[in-house]
Image 1 (tube, rainbow, N blue to C red):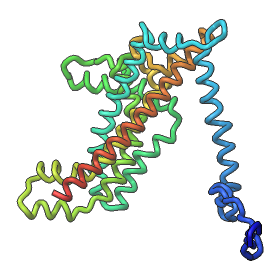
Image 2: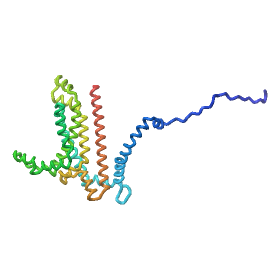
Image 3: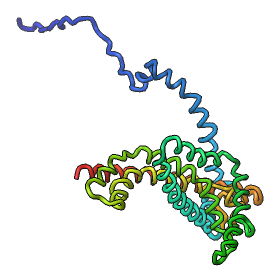
Image 4: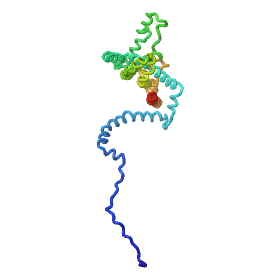
Length: 312
């Protein structure tokens, strides 16, 4: 019909439904009872680490960036890499590297010999290696001073044997420092290497020998790759521990063997220079992180090398 208006009735639909907002992943995770229980148990540990580790490190970092007159500055870091401070830092790195190398050599020989013993004898030898570590470091250091002195046991024995050049100057130089620090780090090296060597399957060595391989070939191609992770771990651990070691270098070293820990002690106790000491502490912390990163890279390279060798 003309003039009529066409209208359409709306289609009948069911009852309207409200779509709930999507729940975030964090809320879903927190809704889990086990997650809440785990967070409740972890809270004391997190608070403990935050108060005793994170806060002191963060405070030391801020202190190292503050100038004498306030404000922020990198002066203390620049001062740490100049003049006598740089020489002390390089001395610390050199002595730490020498200690790590010597500890690896002695620890490898000792752990290799102990790993071939029966469990009873191996346990007794390891007890002899570890028990001195529980004695005060101060007592052990004075013991080395008595042994290595000009009229100590070592020089007296060498003099009685008419050894050329005896008596030797074994104290208050780099030789004495390396001997003392090696004695402190050696138990760590032996424990780590012994655990790795004890897990080596001796049947692999016997199989290589049955195929005509010599001792040097077996050592180089079979045994050394199996214990290489332990060597890397022990070397990096000794290096990191030696970086911040204070007592033995201070007592057995001379002015040219001053290490960073002794420099920090001097700046705090004698010069009241907390900012410079904080910068040196942060540098040691960064060197520690660098050692851990190097350890991770070496592990990744070793795993990739083993996989490549297994597939070839």
